[in-house]
Image (cartoon, rainbow, N blue to C red; front, side):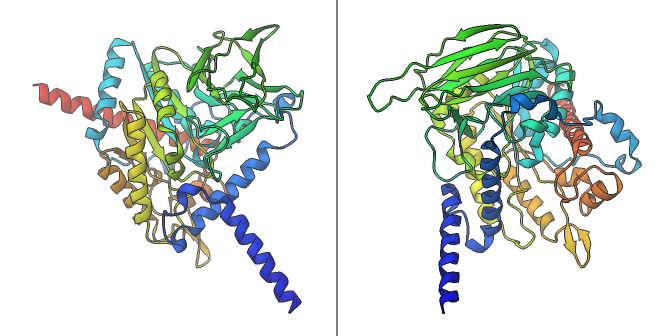
Length: 474
């Protein structure tokens, strides 16, 4: 009897902990049997992320251990190395009219060589380390011009594995992000997170450092701009004075912060090989990140968050996002989700379709000049009757993602079909060594190929857009 009572108490405690970690915006998204797996995965990712951010390690002191090894310099070489990959072509099912505004600006940039096109890439752990996005960005910048890695948040879980920029930070930054329950101390920034200084009673320095990455020549620390929010008053109803110190090689200077508006910016010295920002504050100012972007060409911001299903985007504040868009003026929003939604056990996902349609509509209101491109999840495998196979319901889920694109009048890129369709993940893992043994995530070589394939697909549709436009003008 006593043992049964203890088991009941333990089960009740676990249930309370589980409910605590459920994001508020997911509670009414579906029946429990349809999203139980989704919630569990997101909860686990959120717990892991929180632990990693609180590790008692100063990453600035461990810079030599942070570089991701064996990043391929030219993914086209890899494509030609694998005979089995020569037949893989990007899926051609798209809605070019949904991307017509973006293609029009792309054509103007191609011929004038002036102006900036900015792309926001929203995704999940598939874009960890900026590996896929880095390749996609590289080929776009090679053809259309552009310098810089784009927006980088103050801290990031995948910073140690990022090769497009060396991103280091002390362990005492506090973070609120939209993957956790509630809304936190400050509104979430464009990456879904906001950052503020550590313990207000501590004298520890809160620092972030950026060093030019070694991936590609078009990634200098160009035109850096620090973004931060409005200062909150303390208990005495008075705003404390915040200080920021900028350190560049052997010189240093104070930054002037004016945290009066919903969103504020501070330009930093241009084209430094490295610099760090140290903040002295009493947890009164939200910081969002630093943008590195040339005035002309293409800029791609990787705004992906590990464990994200896309649903937490609804937590982004409309007025703050509109303020960000006054700076960035996005031309294309890419939504690459599905990995944290699809479950081997579930077949019905209409609840997700309805929620994502609302979220895409909301994000288009936030970024009013942007077209949308929906990217499907790739193939993944699970053990079925003793062998690794594509789950039976995955093609139906890819079709549902295509319907999301159609209903929202967006472009659609099927990464699933680009990989080769059913059971292609087995080949990527076992034959070509392009993906990890979890049969879900790509390794650096696979990411290089995936980024190049996505670029080729976009350029093929861009070419067809120009050909169609020429016919209409004849």
